[in-house]
Length: 234
Length: 293
Image 1: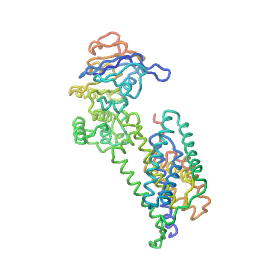
Image 2 (image 1 turned 60 degrees about the horizontal axis):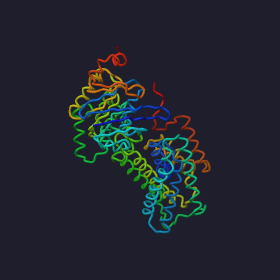
Image 3 (image 1 turned 180 degrees about the horizontal axis):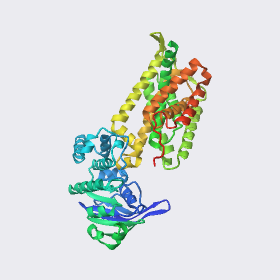
């Protein structure tokens, strides 16, 4: 569904991504794990069109999207839950969800999807008129996910959904991720928490200083000595 | 007490003008963090467009105002596209210096085209009348300025609070990258912000023409700076702040002229700026952005 092929990204003189290639099969959960600063977020930003790669190509459903504007990429069916949630703090929960559906026109459809998000996250419904900044961390993450779903993505990019959440909430969020996937949305998940990411995903890539160093079935990587030592605490 | 109320009434129309200009400052700052020092000069261009609409085309004052607003909306969008957009990712000081350059460019282009002398707003466009309401003397021009400014502010509030475009403007000003991820076209949203801000300034320009009876190519400087102070007073980037700040500055100015010495009114305005910067730099409505650990 998504084929990232040999992309090189630079921040000024810094070579942030070196010939990164990732393949995401339709219907799967793929994870990209690695340490802080390895290039995980950069990869997702490049797919979303926020950063232009210097070379390489990105194709989505057979269509080249390497130089397509971010707003068109959303229209094509890729949306993102960014790192640190990045909800619009001074806007209400409802307005945040409406912004997620920005490229869509059909009001009735949008309202139906808002109801769907509220069914999935009842706490958001209770707080729909509150400004998003007043929500708890877990609720904000739910809002960020709900907002991304409002674009009706076929591929959902998730950047560190576990960040800053208590372990119990992390588990809850990952259950939600599995559930979203089971309803037909393909997911590319970036995580520092390798353990939970590998136990959720079908396929995994390991990135170190801008290079993919390892890949394989998530179940197999979980038992690989290298991954155990570097990411799973022995 | 009667004298005091009269001064407040006088200050309301001037305050409404400052508030309209301050709104443009604050909206542009909110969305691209630029103090658009050419904003007062857009008001001046609006005043001239209004003047020519009245004199050459012989329109009434309302048509003149709408013409000025449309012209300046286009002008604002062009200025952003040509002068500011190429600098969007450079330092803020580079953009600020460019804004000063645009300001001088507008002032001296108008001087080059029309000469430096002032032009008198045709009295026939707005025959003055005074009303007596409960012992207070109210001029019809004050009513016109105040009412049209309030109507424009209500329309603006509606746009920002309820329309999709207005919500996109807020989203972009809160977090540009997240807005991009929502599929919001940031360029288009910034253009719309400049169009609306410039149209409000143009309306204010026509009001200044009615209020002071004359227009001249440098008329944007002092009201522009005072509106900037108003925007900072209310909290730069905060829309209700700009409105309140504008009215405070207008009333303060008429108070200083009425009770003190009108020669000091500019000094008091900029004294206010110094005081805010010393006491609460984030303005009346601004939250203190102390670093959170």
